[in-house]
Length: 425
Image (cartoon, rainbow, N blue to C red; front, side, top):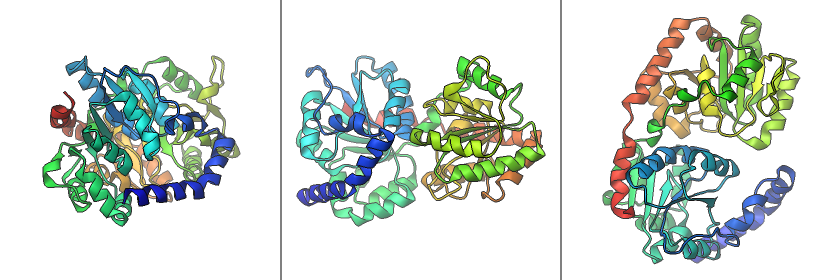
């Protein structure tokens, strides 16, 4: 079964290689981490210092790992921890947000010859997979070495569960080799069970992202002072922050903002695309609106105030939400599944998202039930933004409910560490 899986993986890689080569040459992606992921450039490590290996595929998983790592460093300061990611943006954020880790590197491709050099060099005491990173060969090779595999903040999205069911036999075999699965909710527990996990492996611990420290303390830092100056901001009452926008959405957002701007000329927009390789593309779209704009990467001390600010950096969105009167969640106005709404919630911001929040359905439903967020379509977005910008009381109440909902759901980090402690200490 594993041979067949590895062959399919190789055929898939071969079939899609022209696309990846194009991306590597055109956008300079993947070249940086390719050798390491093949197992040819494994970082140096003391073989006697057996670490806990945390794997966080990209940005969302890195942020989920942050409260866990912080608490581990406090309670078990001598425990060595290393962190892997898959994406370049995830790696950059991990080096910043998970700086306490002893080592940062890229996760190997899921072939034996790529995996074994990492396991030989690191000799981990356990591997902690954040959310859902189920690589059959990697899990098998760890099991062969009696390395416990743990899953923290486990979740399986609507889209993923249907795909996983297509390969249920091999996935069930992989899940049988996992020691413990800490999941965010009872619904995710049911999904893991439907894919072959056992009841004794599972524990509902909640979502550790509710335990992320607030970025409010960063509101006065130098980068935010520059943003304020570039937009001519004296208060946040008319600033819209759109976070993690996806391809195709920026046109919708810019059209909506132009309508808002015609009715509220004091309104300002901060737009943060999800993927760095699209910064240039989004800058051209903003330029086409005819409205003045600045890029975060090009701000200086004498920039004239602009109407639109392009956040073309990595790792600054969380703190930038502190400038928002309204926070709009990207990836939710076209069928991408949405993104994390907890960052603006932690700052007590009024939150808007679109009809496509299926990757974060439980959090979205929770906030809607508590009247702590609003859902709308791209067609109604401009009217909803104008309505809330013009109604300070309604906007403030929504933000207060968002913060209250966020605080009421904290505590998952302690439960998760309690669940994994027997395997890592």
